[in-house]
Length: 420
Image (tube, rainbow, N blue to C red; front, side, top):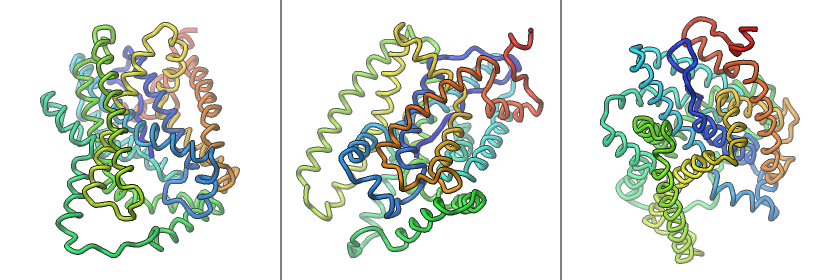
């Protein structure tokens, strides 16, 4: 599942200048978020048997599945996480420049974000906002850390070193004797998947909300054993580093940096893919590949995901500086300025399309068609966001978040409308 970053909200009543490329990057990341979630039918869990045909059968579904696995999954929630850390740095610097308090207000903002995430979790259990809110407290601990420390810890976390060490410990030290190999997933997992599938198909909104709330512990466990929580925090830290370096504040001066990042990340991706293909070829047909090989493959996967993230950020940043891409930048930036609203809105649209209290298309629509549905839905978000921002300063949820932050109603209409 992919994870969102809300657009930065600043610590003064006046609207601070925005970095439009950063807003556009948020909009770009939202495309990837929607591609992953809608291709999985907004189904957050182990797939039930009824979903296997619509997900795996047919060349079109297989192409979509391969495309998502190689280019999309695990690469866009990291962009959001990076941008969250970048926003943290921007807010901290601006608060310092204005002589305003930062920590107390940021903590309160995190609490509100967690509550918004909790409301979101009730209708879709794939919410990431609560994870962001919790990790934001850890991010605060690094506000005085040196750039070198922030960079080192960030790199170690984005490749999931803690998770890999835990897996190595379980594999080589805890398991003194190999457990008997089991063909297929455990029966309990299959039964839970069937129960979840039937709930989404037949359950009321209230029943689904109650089940999603009860799923909180399982979600926390997933974040830990999958390493997502470490990777997310690592991206926060790399975003903090980029914000301190003001890489996006002075794009013209840092153009060479982004070009080099694009080049080296691109070459690294090709090398990683070649290494993975060689290992697959060497051990093709083995039912139980050796544990060291599996550990190496997992490591390559995490490194590749981080490298893809860097490649996307550098590539899109460079493209959006071209005059021919200014129209695309404006469209993406409109969505990105309302990233919190649009992230939640994607979940609303997706659940209404697939769940039983909506159109009930779960298990009826093939994955490739759902994948293609991303583009008209995202187009609607561009139109809605562009229209909204012509009349209002903030997206609906951004306005709510800002008003609760200051504990007073914030002006919503644009200055032009207020004047007239």
